[in-house]
Image (tube, rainbow, N blue to C red; front, side, top):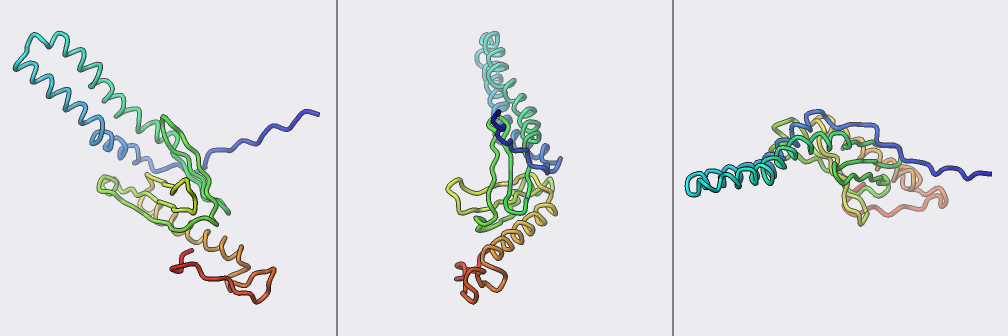
Length: 195
């Protein structure tokens, strides 16, 4: 009898907001592509002013080493990230996929959720976007779902919080804190009243 094939993990079902591509393009221009283009421009101007003969070899070098990679990064990175970035909230876990060169999928059980935060940087606010950060009791760190519309981020944070609380109550034996295996036994409260 042939062995059953191993199950495969399907990608998460929800995409980030389309405006995330513009946000990632702005990030690329501010952090990587913009400085590379400014460096190429400054070196070209300095060569033109002080070493005009150097432009024959410096011009192609600047185009190949700074200008072309900067433009490729500004165009390819946002498209690649948008193609991969996705999320899903299931009954028992949060599933995310992200990255563009190095792609990563992560599943975190709701029973391990400690905090849920919504973060908006200045460039994100410009595009009406937010990031939901789910901190878990895991050494792998927190889960970040970036590029969500503001309203979607608030709703997702609320849903994750409710789902984690419900999962914790289900594991503890109900909202009263009594365990099903030990009727009447109280479950110790979590520090700070966290999920």
